[in-house]
Length: 422
Image 1: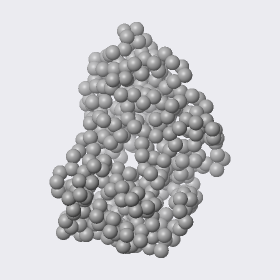
Image 2 (image 1 turned 90 degrees about the vertical axis):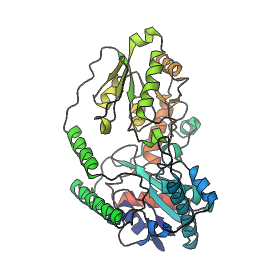
Image 3 (image 1 turned 180 degrees about the vertical axis):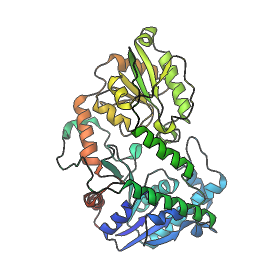
Image 4 (image 1 turned 30 degrees about the vertical axis):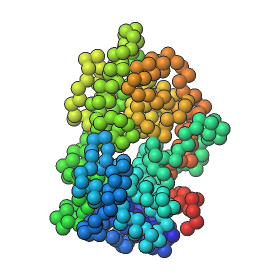
């Protein structure tokens, strides 16, 4: 095995995994100096230096223009300089993989532009690639998939698969992580990541096309917000009639800007409200439309219709009391399925399975809401339970990208070796 690591999560998980895999060689493509904190003592290639004088072919530029990623989404179109940079990396990545006989590539998230390019090239070359992501059953699982995350994942989409296998609970699943990286230590490493990121910018070592804007103020606000939410008793909804629940996502969530046709959360709000107002008056009298803004965007002011209700109540309570859930796509679907709630999704996802949820669009949404409100059999409880058991005990890795132990690393290692011999 010759291993190549692209951008990792903000943890030492990939470092521990590389040690456990014991490859012949481990290479790292360093896009940001900050990642030295999480991947010390490996063979580094500073990507920005490799691409500085690289002149990509026109066909490579045309090719990367078609690859969907955080740099090429519903809300962002890459400019000519960015396209040339991405095309140069595509050519560099392909030549690097061949010259160094890379057999396996690992990276965190499948829609960072360099990871989307890597998926495209590895598929052509027959090289194994794996994508990590925070898990669907947080904080006790993580995703590690050879195809991608969510809509790109390897999760089977046939209801027959779940009905036939009847997946059950596995006793080996651990509800608690035994060896945890202290929060203070996590913060210490991330602060050092941010410092090195600044140095990387000043020294022009960082690749100029970043997937995130690393702002200390932004992350400090996020940290304070999380602490506040953890220590605050949220109000109850206190609604006397039944309601349709709409959990909103972060405006830059890939589930919206990549896996749906919408450009913003505001556009999603408008589409759902218009569908609600198309319902017969009797339905509107019986069911309210309740939105909840994502906790990370509670400070934003979206425009809502006068008939809509915006709640800050606990999501778990809103899911418990609602009649149906309407959303683009998020891990909230898992909690809704546990409560056997009818679900309508407006985006692509690996939940798009008959008996699990209903996929809809602008034109059909009002009719689909009405159908779900009147049809008690919109989901199949047996398929739902088998599906949830498959996700939790078969598809997910028992652990966390931040809180993991030797068993977590071994599960990931085994998954990589199942697909090919080391």
